[in-house]
Length: 186
Image (cartoon, rainbow, N blue to C red; front, side):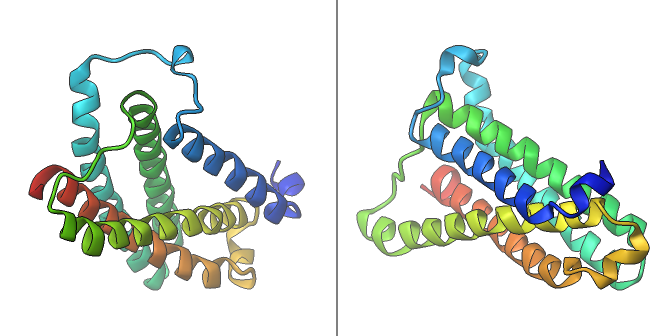
């Protein structure tokens, strides 16, 4: 598989990005039929935002540690950390999409001025970074997994990976900020 996908990383990145964004927008717009999904008790839907904030925090720590390890030349630890962060992101996204499919989006309950001048711009930037992050993450992961470790430094993995990791950290951090605004502060 490694040899077959090696030359198709950009195409696979595009395909996976389209599928991922279709799932996200499908869930947000209510296009995913909930009849095909198992229904959970109400407490599960209420717990998901809190669980996802925790997952985001752990992912931030994992990405930061992965970044630290690659700077120290510990490639295998870096790979393990980044794949763990990707797994955490997959769990986060699955839970998020599941909740959105059944409950819908959460309305901001704070003052109108805070909503207009803080919450909406903050949310928009978070969403933009999250959307931009998706193809970058697929690209760096596919590049890393389709090459022997000794060849990765000659690829664009390092250059794109720095951007992807930085945006990923900011997106996760802003996601926690959105959580705080929606569920804790207001």
